[in-house]
Each structure stands twice: as structure tokens, then as C-alpha cells.
Amino acid sequence: MAAAASSTLFSLSFPFHPQIQTLSFPFSPTKPSLSPKLFSTFKLSSSHSSLTVSDDPFHTGRFLSNDELRRLRLLETFLYRPDLPSGSLSVRVMRPHETDPTVLLLAESFAESMLLPQPYVKFLAFLVKQYLLDRRSLMPHTATLVAFYTQTTAAGADQEEEEACLAGMVELCFDKRGANASIPSPAPPRDKPYICNMAVQKSLRRRGIGWHLLKASEELISQMSSSREVYLHCRIIDEAPFNMYTKADYKIVKTDSIFVLLTLQRRKHLMCKKLPLLSTPPETDLSVSDE
Image (cartoon, rainbow, N blue to C red; front, side, top):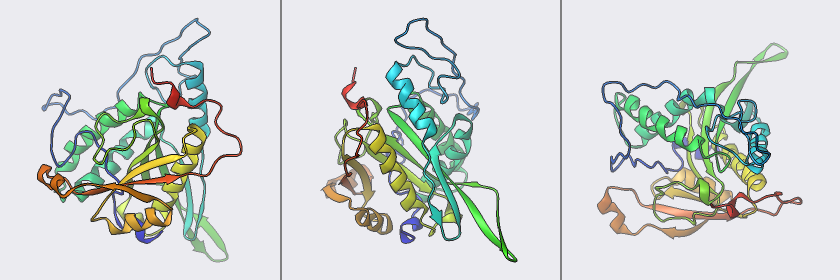
């Protein structure tokens, strides 16, 4: 568990692949604003679907069915709180106002994994923010989990807790509608849950945070999808994350051929785990709603 945290970025699934540098959206290079994207507010009189600020806590900016609203409520209330030897950890779904610090964490992780100098972080942050905003519009078919860590310090006979700080993040896809348009090879099934873009703050590694992000992801997937198969990628060179996934019972399904190196990408394993059945399965499986 602790060793797994030695790598900043556990899995990559960024559509603008940083090793290829192909962009698919227009932007003004003179104004790379990082201000949050504002979405319009909608309200329908139809009983089938409605969207208001109170109904849509994550500001997806689109019309939602009643089932999607119910799923958003499930995401809103999800909380995973394990105890750590040196403090406490809370894992939940990212709120809109937490986008910027999460963007910075992921951008720094990408930059470190690609050995890029610090000045490139701001440009990567611009790309990552557009990506996360697009992914947020697909909720509840996707979700981004964030982990907040609170350090416990001994003060005499009492223990005092410091202010919680962002410790890590991970992105989840629950079904085909939430599948990324550009998924690294080897490609997982698009209609199955997928875990990607797991990152841990450099100063908070070796505390088991990566392990608990993985466990929180599995717990939420069990609530959001009836599919028991969960997929993720792991680069061959990332020994510590691979050991963590193996310990969590993930198995290698397929591995990139050596020819993928010709595309300037690292070779990766596609790994899969079958989650245990819930005693009460989800009422509705979003994976069957692909239209």
C-alpha cells in the first residue's frame, strides 16, 4: 500500500495524449483563462426530467432524467472515510468549486510523469481543466473522486488535527455513455467501469492514500453499476502501482505490443478485477441506457 504511493500518476487516460500532443479543440493562446466554466440553469415542467441549481449539485449543464437525478444524489452523498496511522482521509465526489486545485494536482502529475519542466504545468492545467469540465457534463455516467487528508499531531496527551488538504484524485467511468472518446491501448470494453487518472500529492505519498482511492473507487462503482468487471491501465515501468493493483486482485488481461513504442507511448497492461456481488444490487444500471 505505502509503496504504491511512490508514483504520482497511477494510470493515464487523458484524451489529449501528452506524449503525442494532438489537440482537438480551439483555444486562444493569448487568453488561456483558468476561470470556471459557467453553465446555464434549466427547468422543465415535464415530470420526466428537470434540472435546477438545487437538483443538479454538480452543474452538469444538461437536461437529466429522473434516474440520472437520483444517481447524482447518490454521488453527492457518497463518502469513504478510512483511518490512517498518521491522520484521517475523506474520499468523495469532486464539487465544482474544487475543480481548480484538482486540475493543478493532475497537471503536476502529468508533468512529472513526462519529465516536463515546471513552466509546462500551466499549459497542461489549461488542457486538463477543459477535459475535466467536459467529463463533469457526463455525470452521473462519470465521476471524479477527491481525497482530503487531515494530519494528526500529538500535543501532550491530546491529539490535534490540522486543516484538511487535497491529497489525491481519481477518475471513474461507469458505463458506455461515460466512456472516454480516446482511451489508451489496450482498449477496455467501453460498456464496463473504468478507473483512470489516479494521482497523489508528492508530499503525501507512502501513506496508503493511493490504496484507499482504489478501494473508494471500487465501492462507488459497486453502487453505480451492476457490472462486476472493473478495468484500469498500468504502465509496465510503474512497478509500485502494479504491485498495488496485483495486491488488490487485479489481473493482466492484455499488454501493449512492443510496436506501441513507435507512437512514442509507454507500454501498458490492461488489468481487470471482478468485484464481489452486492447484497442489494443497484436499482438501475446506467450501462443499459446508451441512447
